[in-house]
Image (cartoon, rainbow, N blue to C red):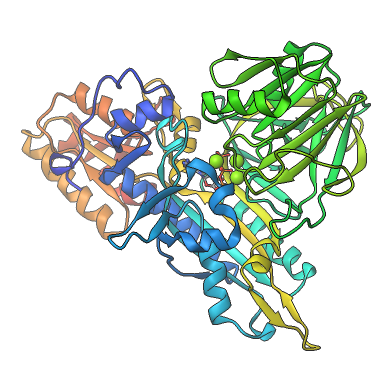
Length: 572
Ligand code: ATP
Ligand code: MG
Ligand code: MG
Ligand code: MG
């Protein structure tokens, strides 16, 4: 590519509202351009990196035997009603109507669609196992789209779905994906940790791991052991000895619109004051408990992660029969006074999953309900949920002893979730009738797993890890171009001839090369080159007449003079 024609402009400064470094660099270097909040165009340089990530993802997915397909972004809302997620997913789901007033959603994920497809296509266990994947644009009306590609409202995801006959099969499919994810992130050069994670609003039955790119800007906190391989999302982290309790809840079926049947965990850190509690809950607010109400000494505190402020206020007041509800901190914290002591539920506050919490004797009880207003009153232990004490838990702190090896110390770091593997079980297959007759002729729901990678998010995650004061420094496998040829003066015919010759040779041997043929001062060219982060730079200057050029790696300060004839070999 000739840079004089490149559809990209570099900027000296990034817009002041771009907070994340990766966001600033991607904008400044002309990789992406915003169209609206959380919605970006990928300019040619950005698109090339995106393609490189996609290529690696495809190669590793194909290697596992997964089959690529492409599903529609526009999904009939009816499918979401079948799975019960039209309510549960909440305001992140973008809805629209067609000209016939039929309702649709723009897919934030594809469990419903893939389960429907599977149901129509596979009618025998002999076709299993099967794993399907796609690389596709997803839509989520994120409450706070930010940090450029890190949290977009329209973004590119690789999503895969496995279908198995039994749980052992799911274990194998999951393991295959887990290993493929490791290879993908290794090949991308990412510095990451695979961590044990909580079940988010997908609501699964089993294991789940997140792949976290280590970066200070990350919105998740990772707890890891310095001595063994224990690593978990803080939401899931366990440590001992305990000063609080983890309670596992099993909610049995209850009428037509049953309560959520996944076991859930609630941490009850041993805090004494409301302020301590609020702080603790904000830290450990797990994703399926978007709203929580606690009562301490007759005062109730609601920690609201999202939702409409006035509606929340009213609902809390009614639900708790409280005298006064006071909003302490915008829409995050409500303080409630005059509430009857010891009972803090229900919480049906425009959240993906509604949760009832009861606190008694320092223990919290929790029941999940997927239907809005379903548990608004009269939640009864035993009927609506049962409790099992699954172990002791305490708020994890840095330097705590590792719960796994019991010898290493725990350390905290920040992470960007770039991938997520998840054992779904039969959640979707049961609700959407994806069943097959097994060997003895009994109809059984197929067992599913789902696996996501934030393809566009990866661009930002890599840029967070690969940069210096002058700009980005792409790993070879992802770089938009591998080699940047920079003739110092385009008006010097000797320099340009050599530049053109090298450009042709490199391209002929399959090396992606950018030739800076612009009439700019050398300082400007070098600055742009550093900003874009192309791994190898060949500078052609005064020594062109002797057939000598300068060879420099983006990540190293030193330069080397080499014979033009040796450049191709050296690059490879
Ligand atoms: P997060 O916790 O960051 O909101 P998530 O858990 O909601 O992510 P998943 O449903 O697990 O996301 O989706 C699979 C992957 O898609 C994530 O691991 C992440 O890499 C990516 N992803 C999710 N939301 C976004 C977004 N708004 N912008 C860019 N990538 C995203
Ligand atoms: Mg999310
Ligand atoms: Mg997440
Ligand atoms: Mg996730």
